[in-house]
Structure formats: structure tokens, C-alpha cells
Length: 176
Image (cartoon, rainbow, N blue to C red):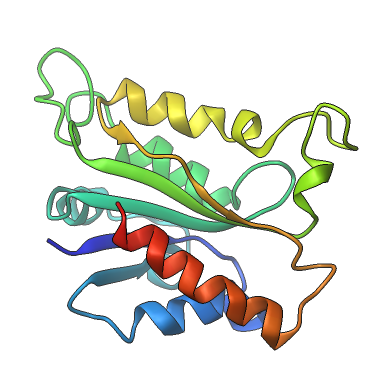
């Protein structure tokens, strides 16, 4: 079963790392379905039935996005609100269509990991800041997996730093 990678980046053509990850994932179409929300829905009008069908067809689902304003890009929040519906993903008559599926995040963070700590500038760890996703996936009875987070892209946007992330990300996906 292929892994679904739901990419939410509002300007993927200007991305340095998410774009590179997509390029690498696209080299393995037998393993990964790459679904870019901003390309699929540039007008923000989400085809809920299509999205639910795509989700049902995969056992592993990864939400890939850049971390800014301590969250995801806005289209992912809209997508969650519109697609993960009562009666389909949760609720007594839903059948919990996503139950048992492995779900996780692949996040790029501009600054270094030590800034995301109790003693750091932002006071919280990345795990703590991503907790709403964990709770959402738990609520719909999906199996939440620890996220993949790659830090420091603002400090070092070099091809070498970005390239270092690729095998780490692919290994993370293989181990789902």
C-alpha cells in the first residue's frame, strides 16, 4: 500500500526544502502518492468527497508542511475542518473511516531545535506545539506516529543542508 503525502505549501515553487522533498518522493511513484493541496485547490474550494476517497485508499498518511506562526498553512486547517467530518471520520454512525490508519506529520522549521524548548525563545517543544494534530488523529481513532521535523533551514538553506534531509525523510517514511 502506498503512502499518501498531503503537501500544504502556499508557494511551493519558492520553497527550498518542501519542493526538494516532493521531487524525491516523485521518484518513487510505486511507494508514494503526492497530493499538493494548494495546487489541487488554488481557489480554496475543496472537493470533500474526492479527499475522503483519497484518504480511504491509503493506510499511511503524512501531512507535509512548513511550520510558521506555530501552525500549518491555512489551507490545511480548512482541509481538516471540511474533510474530517462527523458521520465519516468520527461519530457513532461514522464507522470511523480513518481508524487504524497511520497518520503523522513531516514539518520543516526555519529555526534550530533548541529554540523550541522550555528554556528556548518559544517556550515549548515542537512536540507540544504539534499536539493538536496528535489529538485530532487520536479523536478519529487513527494511529498517530511521532512526526519528522527538520530544523534550521533559515540558518543554512544550502543545497548540502537540504540534501542531508532527504535520506532522513525517506527513511522516516519507510519506517511507518
